[in-house]
Image 1 (cartoon, one colour):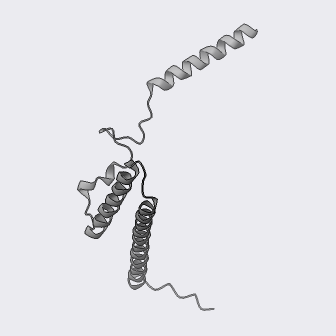
Image 2 (cartoon, helix red, strand yellow):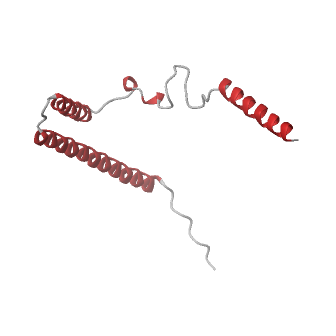
Image 3 (cartoon, helix red, strand yellow):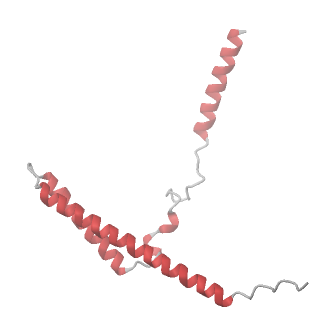
Length: 125
């Protein structure tokens, strides 16, 4: 009985492993092999020039940090200053996005209020 249980468990383990190896999970992949964010391609969307400038500026500052870290004795004050500048730019970008979303939400709600029909009056008794 023990041999039968152990043998069936081994067969089950080998079978499930082999079956799992055949079927790759492709639910989130497209035919080009990219992940599920394939609809966020940069060439298909309009990029705000200010956002692009900020992204490039932060990338340049990160590159300066990497260059400084390659030195034998990096200037930690300079690295801290660059990190602070990056953090300030990121926080400004987050605030701008929040402001943009809030304004758009207010705009949508106002349009909905203008176009929505009046609620029906309650029946008179």
